[in-house]
Length: 432
Image 1 (cartoon, rainbow, N blue to C red):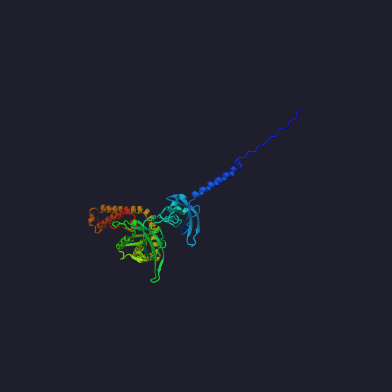
Image 2 (cartoon, rainbow, N blue to C red):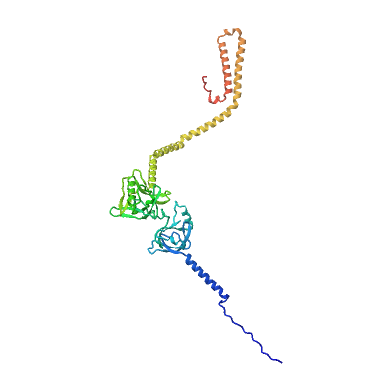
């Protein structure tokens, strides 16, 4: 018998750098989170603040920012400004477009208010406004002032010449950014509108500050100023045009419902005026709105024409005629006469109905009477013979009897042709 030892199996432990498949999920989550964070830092862009007068229905993450019709950002937050008069809107602009965030860049709302001259504003009223960004020059900036409508002019890089226009009438609905036109051409924009009261004279007016772009005026015959100051040539142009009747007036396009704007145009027979100064800025004289003048003039014409009509005399005549008609219709004599006529017509119809069947026998009797008279005359003539002429009055009697027979026969013939003669009598004879 042999004895031996049993061999034991020993496990070998090998160390590896891989922690195991159990750690794959958390490692992948960390990697994805890191990648999303880096992507957010790269693509999130820059946040800027734009101040508006009102929120106008803007909502965070819903109201977009567009540039040339392409989405470049969105609203991230809204809050009331510290002054309590404005709204500060934070915009998150994509990093690829943050190079356009310059001091000359403008932001305005499309669809905040109904504008009849801009059909796209109708869409904004239904789906909410959008913020439009128009790039400009200048230094990098993060704070901007926004407008509730599209500026009348795109941001200009050249100098602007400013003027004051004082309107005596209501101009409160004229907003900053409104258009300034010269004979229908866009030449500037409204920069400020305010109310002014002169305690010395008691005059109430609305000074409107406008900025005119010299590049839009088409000035020829004068070289551009070397120092970039366009004030002297533009002032010289305005002085000449004002002397020829150029005036500023408020207008709307479309009339009565469109947005307000300042229109520079010539007014026929305008009072003499010149370019004055107010707080260092030249003042362009103004006139009342054209639409108001036109409507007032037409209203006066209509009123004058209405006043010229003989309305009172016509009314008196109509009332007089109506009174006479009422008097006639209510008169007892008229009623009695009408009743009498009705009764007479009925009686005539009844008499004709009774007489008409008797006309035939009457005519026959008349003819028989005439024939009998003729037979009597003939018999008398045969009896008398040649001695008839010796009788005293007998031939004359026979002649009268013959005439009577002739008359009776004529009467019978007439009644046969005109039976109505029994009621109306014989019609008068007419000479041929």
